[in-house]
Length: 285
Image (cartoon, rainbow, N blue to C red; front, side, top):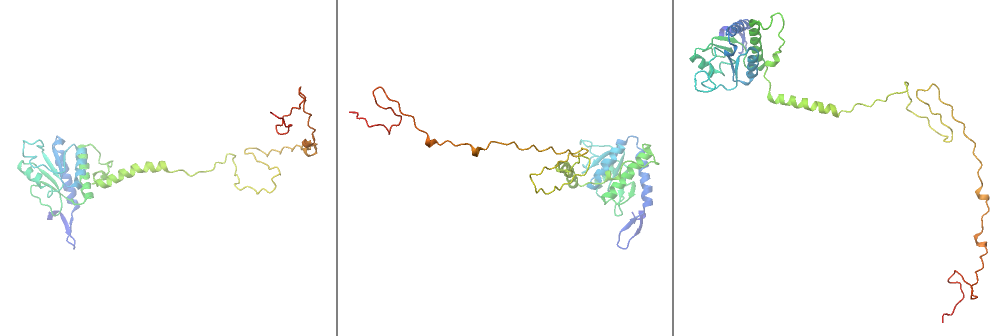
């Protein structure tokens, strides 16, 4: 990889020559377009940072993706169910994906690999020098390769920017994705619970004074203003009080001065009375 490095920094980090990166990217895109059947192009990434990019690359170009663990014998063992016979192999990291690169050498399968400055080029036919350790760098390189393949096939024009954003090729942490989904579910519930501030509507069309005058004379007639009226209505005249009979001047009957009626005489000559205790003693014997 020394020929692809621009220079070495004092801290020991090698800088990649981006001109050679672009040249190798175009060469890899030409090799992929040369395959008549897009499904015969196999894209592999065992590292989590490149799995999303591989799936997006396969969905746009029609390639066959293998995201995750590579089953040994996929290219050599015809008995297993996962056996494949691709015509071109594209790997994300030749060091992490050493098993498919080694099996590709057994079946004379050309290999395109995104290689870092410390990567080995053994069994690699087209090496694209780039930083394959950062999740953003991996997503960007797969996005650029996908765009060049579509441009060479004539699916998109070079003069018009591709509408697919590079963010779709970036790795997303499952925990962060779950938190975002939970936040989206909680947001509508909070919006429903929020109560809008109450605003007083002036139906009369003018400003209404909120403060009322202090009332000292309760017997005085208060003027009530009507909303929407041109002028306040005149107060109705108060009717004069009607003279009533003086109950205190009426004669009061003296119930104690009434003369009791004389008791009626019975046929036997005795006086009948209704008072049991006031009668004449009668000898019952």
